[in-house]
Amino acid sequence: MAESLLDVQGLKVDIPLATGTLHAVRGIDFAVDKGETLCIVGESGCGKSLTSLALMNLLPRTAKRSADRLQFDGIDLLTYSEHGYSRLRGSRMAMIFQEPMTSLNPAYTIGDQLTEALLTHQPGSRRKARDRAIYLLERVGITGAANRLSQYPHQLSGGLRQRVMIAMSLMCGPDLIIADEPTTALDVTIQAQILHLLAELQRELGMALILITHDLGIVARIAHRVAVMYAGQVVETGTTEEVFNAPQHPYTLGLMDCIPVPGKTERGARLGSIPGVVPSLIGDLSGCAFRGRCPFATSQCDDAPRLRDISRDRACRCHFRPEERRVTAELVPGP
Amino acid sequence: MLLYTLRRLLLAVLVAFTVSIISFGLLRLSGDLAAAIAGPEATEAQIEAIRVDFGLDQPLVMQYVDWLLGALRFDFGNSFYFRDSVVSLVADRLPVTLTLGALAIMFALIVSIPLGVLAAVKQNTWIDRSALTIAVSGQAMPSFWFALILILVFAVNLRWLPVSGSGTWAHFILPAVALGYYATPAIMRLTRTGMLDVLASDYIRTARAKGVRPGKVLFKHALRNAVIPVVALAVVQFGFILSGSIVIETIFSLQGLGLLMWESIGRRDFPVVQAVLLLIAMMYVALAFIADLLNAWLDPRIRVA
Image (cartoon, rainbow over all chains, first blue to last red):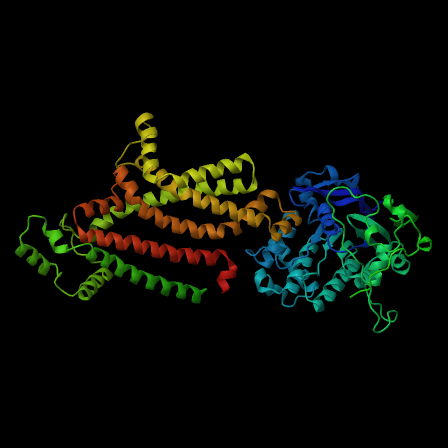
């Protein structure tokens, strides 16, 4: 297999707090190939967003990043200076954020902010940059694109602003786009549109996409591979098909239970939920991070499980195979 | 933008009108003007003659209307002391005060904005703390005292600059620094707070994610937003500086409006006092109006509203 576009091994993000160090990301491994879509799923507070910011080196000032290996297209990002990073960001790896309402600069027009993305990396004619901005605004489904350029962010709705952010991320034709829950702040009706747009653009332009999301429905449709995160660790990875058809980790099983599947879930049946909350990430965790919420937990789970390879592309962080598990605690039914 | 400008303009005119009533009324309330003009040795008959002469026997409203109509035609009567028209007196002194004010606000901006940006970027380091110390001591020190210290150090001991007068540009340096320093702390602190807010905002992260260089992120994306409230403050501070020049001009014997005002109060030269008071108040109103327009021009969200 050719070298991956992005290769991450042992990525950690630590945030020193008054009460101790918050180990938000606890050594995660994943790889993304050229043109591939990787979805990172997991509930709030499990380190998904910090992972994406760590890749872009955009972490908050207090957060510390470390890794055993962090390579982008053969470039060692760990030794990269801020200056080097700024040449990479926007041109070869771009990012779309969770909050379209606050992610655009209120003092400059859409056109100014869009063209800046291109002119920063390819100094040249403003006219060309403007044409590219208009082309991409049309491409992301904004009507009257030429007139939008002179508008300010506050004149656009949240959905439009997120489309502008997507267009902005495409200005230089990047190899990798990282989208951190790009639809969380939007209306439900817009959410699907934006995600489909992203998936379509990814296919057409052949870029790699890391999509961080809660929406397992969209994951099933657009992801090539899935990484399930829990408490700052990857607990399961695999191709979308494998993970959805045969989830290995109890947490993944729990997540699957939380979504209704047309044709499979019976009408009126209760949807599942995972009892309890994510454990505090301050200080070290002992044993399996999920054992407090796991219906199959045994005394063996007091030892931390390793991420065990199941096949070439598939790994799971649990001592047991699905067939070895026995229910030891009653799952609390959903409300 | 046009509607906004018209609304602000209407408000400014209303404020100016109110100010004119107050500046007129204050002097009338300060005692019997005719007696003051006539002096302590005047007889009852002389005072009465002056009262009729200056129209002070008319009802207060008529006096005000008379004065206002004059003021609208830039006719403030003649100075009692100089036997010269008030307007030409003021026109003589105004450039000195404006030069002093402009130099002072320039000094304040040149010192406080970079210091505020630096303090925000180096938040919680010794740089931040020393900038804060400078700001706090600036707010705590009375400007006349600071002016005297400046004179002592730079004029008396070092002999680099003249003590007082308004002959050359060198005469303006110490007064401008003394006056400007007064405005520095507020501007610096607002710049620092604004920059801290803006630097933590999502759109700064977006700019960095686009690959914009750190310096450009700081000055194009951050400062542009942080500076919006600072501009309004600076313009208002300029108004304070103009009124504060009364003290500073007196200390440095700069022949500006402030000194004229100060001397005219002593000479009971009321037409001059009234005119200068109105002029400074009008400049203040005009500056507040300009601050509003600048704010709208800098912040697109206000511009449309």
